[in-house]
Image (cartoon, rainbow, N blue to C red; front, top):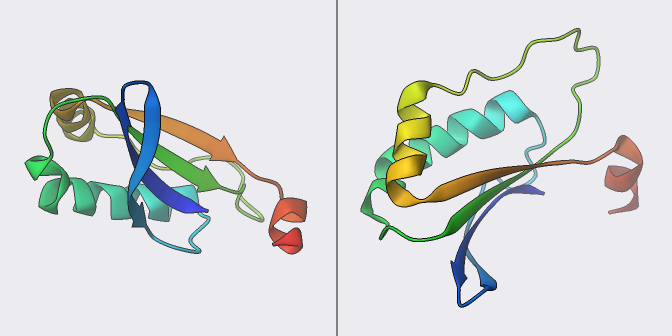
Length: 96
């Protein structure tokens, strides 16, 4: 799935950006999102936005994951971006 950035207008969600196509590891997705947020997201109008991260558990992972920095959280708050985490199993990936 990767990351879909959606704008909510009048209760309707519209896809505006698609980041990191075919990336499924959450740590990598957050790195891509933070870069995008610094380069493109800083110019977005304040409103109701959703960053939907589609990810799968990492094979062999024993814990850990991305650090969501306070600066990233502050940028999301300034713009109005909520973060959704959509976890998919490997079976879903095999079907697509």
